[in-house]
Length: 125
Image 1 (tube, rainbow, N blue to C red):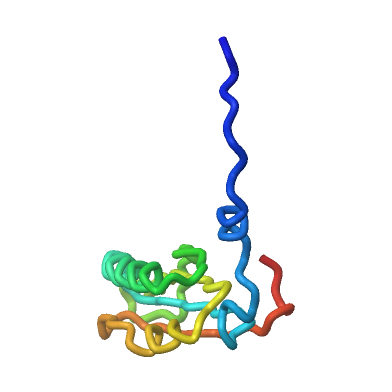
Image 2: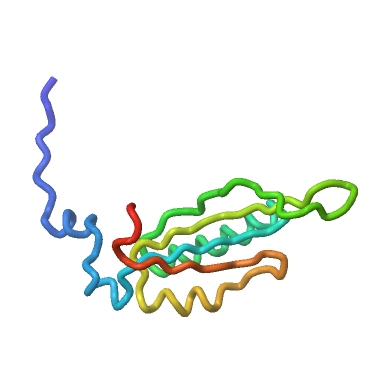
């Protein structure tokens, strides 16, 4: 059996797989953490999928959604504890066009979104 010899990959393809430089990424050189939280896990998953599609269409590099542990903030009544379900998106190389997308996220009234901006060099990927 003969081994297939493949031609070398073009330099453009190798460069495309690397992280873009800060100049290519725009003025942002940090990372944005997007947290979604809700008491209803099914509704949260539906809204998370919508956010995932919007972020993917914007063309930025991101990781997520990452399900975070369920928390119990405070007892609601005698029936039991309220649960808070959370999802996390990590946008590693945001662009200028990405910020308006974050501002106009169409979320249900029971899903809360919060953002955290981290400066470059203060985190490890």
